Length: 554
Image 1 (cartoon, rainbow, N blue to C red):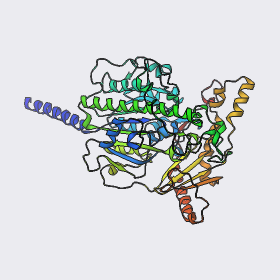
Image 2: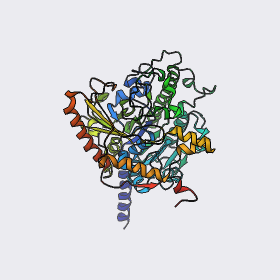
Image 3: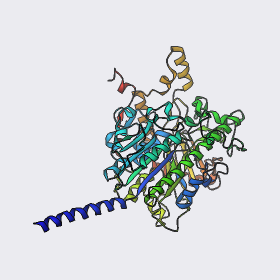
Image 4: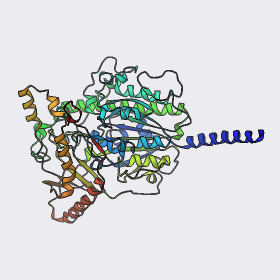
């Protein structure tokens, strides 16, 4: 009997040791997502002024994808696309959609799938995805993570001014506050815990793999425009780059010098653009914006350096995969354009670095031009973690690109903008391969912001309430935006660019007789890709409008 008991005890002990070892064999993940960062704003993607030595080193030790694209060129739909590995046309959540992500859909997001598979989960920084019944107010996302240190909506440069959760941080500036959260998450002791952070366990278990999502709100204008150059701010944010000759971006055109707009004036109503995106219209204002963005990116670079140092100190750097990308880019006056929510390269083309220290292959430091998208990131994370991906995922697993087993995962990239509102942006969709890009636009019939502001002033209504409240009627409008092109709605304007010879998309070749065969091919590709993006199932969303959460809802 004693021998049998001893055998059982030994069996349990070895089982626990095996289980713990197996768990530790799973890689950890740190996923860093910046905000409004176009390709070309760091040293490793060609910027000669902005200093990013730590990110450059990460790229030199990992794989840098030089042809990575987002799915939607504005924060909320792009970030939800990453969470769910779905195009917006499938998940159907945007600022103007009147919807939030349902609990059912959220349960199939990459953090929740990884949590179910045994991962310890953390979210730090910004959340711009309305999740659950009531969206940001539902509390569903906050409670879903083992570690939560984030604010819903914009953080600003000084997050304590907007979100109480950050009040316990020693720092005041966004990047440094987030850095404190990272250190707290990685802290494997019970000492010096960060006040405000929500821990569902007192400390991170050492025998459990983790996935940490770091979501920044920089170099977004909501952050950089609120920089005050306070005496206590780090010198990075006060003096860096101010002594440099900061050039305007290629093909910059100041507002006063625009002779013919890039897009027809009744299609892209520039006069209705949000004021925060108008700083690119004069060289002086644009220079200040670029300096502040460069400062923010250098701050983020220091965060990356600190992260890698902490991982090394914890002895987990060799088992932690680091992914770095952005949710989309932003115009700085190129061709007289400002803002985002378009399908041009400035908006859709972003940096993507994947560093996997356990893959010691000849591709270390490689720069790959395979067409990849942001929705591929969650599919790839699950693959590297040995977790089966949900059937709802639309992204590709690009893990075999990392080790040279594949050269390509797709022929075409599909991008879109369904954020067509009072602020003047048109609906548009694009397909591109490595050589050509085709963009199509639909009639812009949205009611202008200028007239809404005029009415708000006349009736004494708060302007932001008129501009930003989303109503039930908006749900119907957005639904039509999604479905109409699939039902035969015709474009009112089209563009065709030869990206190989015209990477800045200066010359629309649509009418060229020699390009008609290519045009027909790209139109067919659009037809196929938009159908794939939409899928066949209804979107898993909840109603999220002013009416749905007011006393008189019906």
